[in-house]
Length: 318
Length: 150
Image (cartoon, rainbow over all chains, first blue to last red; front, top):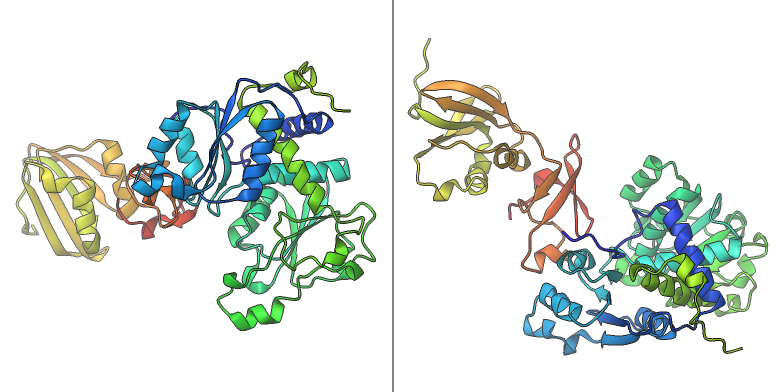
């Protein structure tokens, strides 16, 4: 099994490493355009379409001066001819310095990282992990709160299938958070994550109510989508579908520092009247993805925070 | 009082006792006993005080490594083993659950890469008491007793 710098999950990262990557992201936010990756080739292999994530990674690579190869549509790959994932990864490893991959199968990125010495960045493997999303979530929290420590984080909506909330919960374990799980019974936080919380001394409460008073305790309100196809009982869906929609009139008692996050795409779980509210942060959050991904790509290619801070290749557009 | 042996005694080899009858085929598969050249004697539905009914397998002239035997812990954690030399029991063993199960069982998750790619499986045994393993690839936790052999 090869040990390389791949990013498959954030679950095992230390507090120090997370803070290090966030500092790197902050440097990239100051100066997003550089030539520090000139001469490098970044492959983006999307075995499952994801326009948002792919554009963010490709923009990150392009803004650092790397060249990008890859595919956005699995229908045009040899996979449809029966080629194994291993062979595809081995082939692309001959061309690229780093491989960013999204795959519909769980564990695909882990396996890919074992068959090549080229670092793999997991851009989502089925419903398993999506570490760059977690990194941008943490960067957004850090930026808006000034710290990751001792925060009240409310997770709302689909906590059963939502992989972003699971990854965030695990990555936040170093920072003494208090979670509040707000979900309908059918989509409540799975037991294994509650066990994880207890094992790691993460405080949490659970509830089904979502209202002004509940929101008043939050530093971060992390919204997710309640999807109809997740329900076995459609009557239950009809009963709860409007209970987890956030509207501007629910923000009257919110703490001044409270920010609303959402992994996007949003459907109707946040009313459009929230968009211009100072608590809304989901569009900036997506922008933070660019800086977080610039940091991840640089880190797996062996660049250090010092390299980024003392970078002579910064392009000043101002 | 001497009990008559239902299957003949071994001169040299390994006796695998206390196998649940329904797991007989799995034990044969796991230890590749279908393809050995030595004599293999199988007694199914034998009376057992401990289990009601059990299977005993006697394998002549074959001694297994601990790693091979410990694989049995996945399908038959309560089996006992006797190593026979010159008709005498020279060693008794119980199987121990390994920390890692490599290429022994399949992942229960149909969307796991290991079920869709020609590759090995790896599980980490995360709770021996509760019999829970976690797939190294898709990270899904599952019950070891429900696992199907690869």
